[in-house]
Amino acid sequence: MALQQEVLALYRCIFRLARKWTSLSGKAQDTREEQEYIRTEAKTLFKKNKKITDESQIRQHIKEAEARIEIAQHYRIPYPRPVNIPQNVLAPTSAKLKKKQKQQIEQSKPIYLKSYEDT
Image 1 (spheres, rainbow, N blue to C red):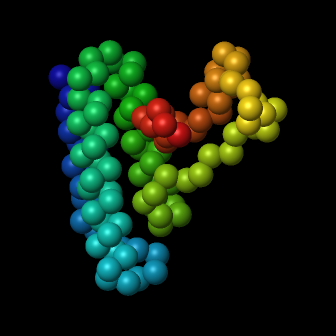
Image 2 (cartoon, helix red, strand yellow):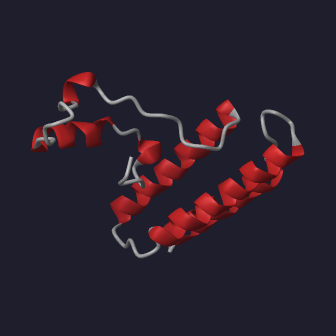
């Protein structure tokens, strides 16, 4: 029950952030677009993860959300930051990735992008 309250408090915090958000450019159009992005992203990820019942996974997703909030507030950009994958992990364009390479790519993914399988 405490975990559920923590998740709901985080959800409210994200929507409060979206309501108070102003873009770095200061333009009204940019601000509206970024506010809408924050709301849409939160809804999408919370719906995607709503069936997770494992407490450790829930805690990981809470850490991910908190990291994204901190990064957005610090850099004043709500979008995920780019990820640099170590060069020794990448296979030539004609070869398939090996199991070890896939594992290293997954480990190099920062916490704020763990919900994205496609990145």
